[in-house]
Amino acid sequence: MGKSMVESARTSCRWTGSYGGFGKLDGSHPFKEAVPGAFVDYPVRFRDGGRVFYFNFALAREMGLIPRAHPDAMTPALTRIVLDTFSLQIINEYDLMHHPELLAQARPKPYMATRYLQLQHPSRKGLTSGDGRSIWNGCVTGRRTTWDVSSCGTGVTRLSPASGREKKFFRTGDVDASYGSGLADLWDGVAAAMMSEVLHGNGVKTERTLAIIDYGDGSAISVRAYPNLLRPAHFLHHLKQGNLNSLRQVVDYYIARQSANGDWPAPLSGARAYRYLAQRIAADFGRMAARFESEYIFCWIDWDGDNILMDGGIIDYGSLRQFGLFHHEYRYDDVDRMSTTIREQRAKARYVVQAFAQIADGLISGHKKNIKGFRADAALRSFDAAFAAHREELLLYKLGYAPELHRRLLADAGFREDLRRFGRVFSYFERAKSKRGPYDIADGVTWDAVFCMRDVLRELPVRYQAGEGRVDAHEFIRIMRSKYASREDVLVYPARRRRIDRFQEIYLRLLDRAVEVSGRSRARLLADLVRRSALINRYERITGDAALITSKRLIKSRNTMNKNDIYKLISGFASSQVLRPERRVRVPDTVTWDRCARMLYQSMIRVVAEYREGL
Image (cartoon, rainbow, N blue to C red; front, side):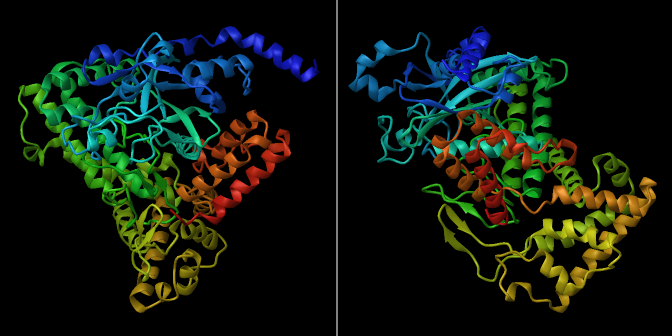
């Protein structure tokens, strides 16, 4: 036996007894006892032929599934337990009708597919909808936080849109009906793993990928985790049906979990807790909507509350994108309907908050009232205030001002008013669209934005620091012109010239006022803006297009790389895309990687640069 094989065996033996947490992910979950009838239980069997494509060691440590000192390496024992825990396929209704013998392979406990509201279904009350290709593995507690774990791609359930529309059960793997397969694509799971780690690194609330199991035929199971995987849709499902008893059960369960995890203040109960729920979701969703719009994160938020978590976190990366420019006319084509646009997300998020004002009132009064009666509810005012305040903070942040200065700057009436004026002229350029007009693309329709505002925010302070003075209008346009802009799109006519002058006038006024308020010298403050803005508005910033292309390249190279380098590659790539100075981590050292991994990493960075302005 070679030296490396001996060391691998020793490592495996050392950690074999340290994986007990996986045993808790056996299909049991407190939600089942708390809200009977809010799920469909399925027997599951082991799905053969899988191999661990990706395992998130950092997340597993945080969840307490592996020891903190565990190396970033898949030991044989860890590989076996990951496959045994997550390589599962449900025995669904079709199986029971045609292959009842499969029950002999079933695990001891069933796994739930939860019911929730979903606009893809003909029923607008959530009678047939929910987890269409996912099951909940269970929950584990690590570092005083309880995490939910679910798996996507485990087979088609009766809650899939296909069953809801055609009123029949489907065989897992059926490709003849939309949403009828129940399987998940490997490239989709890898792209989601990369994007979720990037967004998590940048402080965006999101589910994260714990593991991906590859079956060699393009299908995969993606295992995702978050401290609470409930969506607004899990609540609105009961609200639409007028079932206040079940609604109270899910609300009380959610409150108890949030309090136990420390995400809520001291345990609340009764009317006080229900009012707090509405106010909390209003604040969280207001900040979420502002951040998504500010950072060009397209997340299909709609009245059903399906594609978002209860705290405004991201779930389900199937239609999620991070744009390079403010492509605010893009719509995703979901077979028989078009999505909201990035600008419409705010109104949809606000409507979800309105529904939770309705929920709080219904639980307190014992009667469900019409949602129209909550158009002026205090929760909506809280949402509007949170949205406006966070949007100001985010603009200030993009300009390069450090968070420790924000409170002092925004407390200054003159600075704040100028920031609002700056926001209006900034928005004019940000929202400028190509004369080409709307056109169809592979997954929907779009209408190109033409200016890259990150570029101008990055370059202006550099010019001013060098003593160049105000930038000429033609040079200003040149700096922020994107590849989507035609010659006609970038003409410098009198009105546009005035806006360019206005942009720089207010920018410099903000700088001068910040010098007075902060007590820092102009040179020092400008140097901070140059340094911070260089990272915040960096040239290479990942987009949805780049995530898809890099994930497919990674999959194509998987058989030529050391399997442990895949984790290093994804985590290292995500680290390179952390564009917040306060959260910046060390750029990965690729020296220890094999040649294939190093080359692929450099290729991925080039793809990010190439598609930095896209969808």
